[in-house]
Amino acid sequence: MNLSNCASNFSIEDLASDAQRAMFGYWQNARGNAPLPLKSALDPVALPRQALSSLAVVEPVDNDDFRVRIIGTGVRAAVGRDVTGQQISHIDGAGETLENLRLCHAQAATFYTCGPATWAGGRQKFYTSLMLPFGTPGHIERVMAVFQFTYHTPESLSASWPQVAMLQH
Image (tube, rainbow, N blue to C red; front, side, top):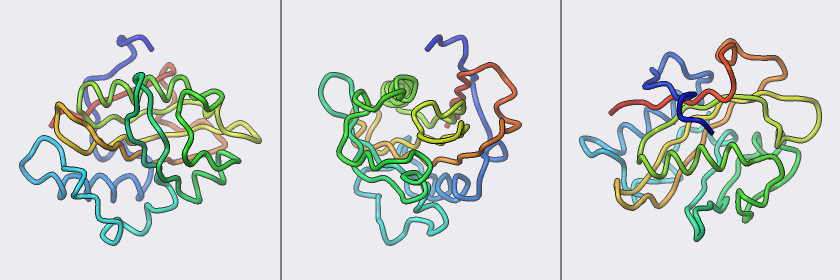
C-alpha cells in the first residue's frame, strides 16, 4: 500500500455502522486516558452486542503476520468461510488487509479502511473496517476489526481505493 493513500484522520461520524460506532465507544472507554487499552480490557461480556457478529479479533504472530483468533458469524457469512485459526497471509486476496494490520500494529493507532472485499466469496462485496489495537504502543497484543459489508459501493468508497484513515488520539 502506498502511504499517499492514507488520510490523516477520521471521525466517529465517518463510521459506516452502529456496530463500528459502538465498538469505538467501547475501545475509548477501555483505554481511558491511556494511548491504548490493554489486552486485559477485552471483556467478552461487556462487548456491545450489536457488534459481535461483525467482529474479527487477530493477534500478531512471527514474520509480521496475524492469526485470526475469533471471527463473528456476520463476517463468516459475508466471507463465505470460517478463517478462524488461519494466518492473514494464507487467506486468498487478503494482502491489503495484511498491510493495513501491519500499519495499525506499527503505528499503534486506530484505522478505518474500506474497499472491495476481494477476499470474500460470492457476489462482489465492498467493506469498511474499523481496526482497534489493544496492548501498549510498543507491544500490540490484539487488533479487533469491526466490519460492515455491502453489495453496492458505499459513499465512503467514492475515493480512490485503498482508502485508509487514522484517528489521531
